[in-house]
Image (cartoon, rainbow, N blue to C red; front, side, top):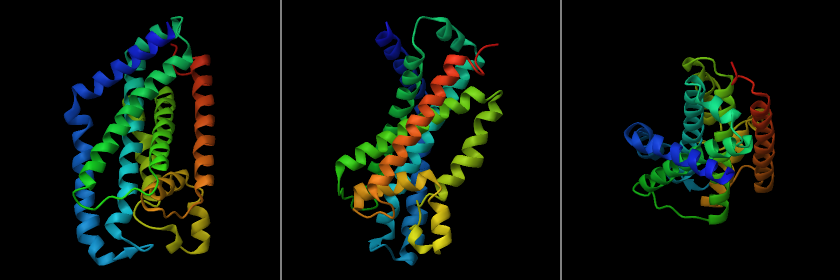
Length: 253
């Protein structure tokens, strides 16, 4: 029963964002293309090298990760809040389906959209730079774990949201600033020592640098530490999300 429920939720999520692909998959592709053109070709030619790599080559992993984070988070927060707003989530809550299955189903749909968007951006990036992969296992594991982490975060945001405007608060005022300050466009080694320490309080720094290591073999953060940080955040957010679902916080009238 739980397996059928999980498959149903995932298929429903996939159909939801593939049916409106022009709004879910096309905009990230266009946005990232503009990033590549502006920051890569125009500004990158003036910046020169970053940590021994061509600037365009250096920012590609960060841009891919940025698209994965944004779409994994955005898919779950919008979908789960819509289910809550339409009160269809209440039917799941009173069904014999485990809350773990509900969480896994929504997260699975968000992860698939995030990974597909990341693949699209990677294909686009290949037209601008000669992509080389230093460690393919690091690339796959980091992008998957990061997508899972932010998909869970999107569900938590949706639980607490009371109106559609609340869905955009976290992405606009928290997620976007943390992403731009997460080492996507620069190496934190360029910062003064104090600000390097401050930057390391940003969890996205660890994800972007671990992902960059998978491509370039270069990172401002130790890879073991980066994986540990990601796994700890996944464990914490998963526990919190299950707690919210079990208690029905923000879900029951």
